[in-house]
Image (cartoon, rainbow, N blue to C red; front, side, top):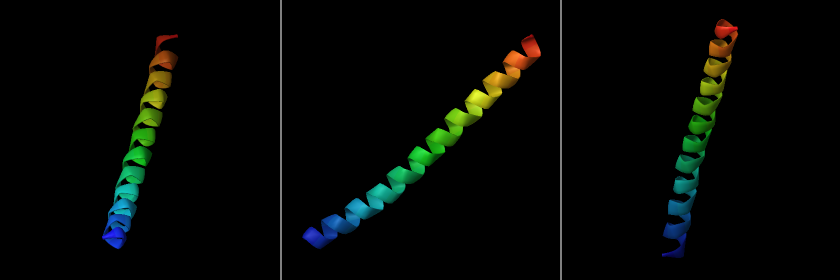
Length: 42
């Protein structure tokens, strides 16, 4: 039972870590996009 929970926890951490990295990439892409818009406006 405990071993199964540890395996589930490890899998959850892997999935969660991927989602976090994807979210950071998306945020970074938005920031770059905003910077481009600002450059074009000025």
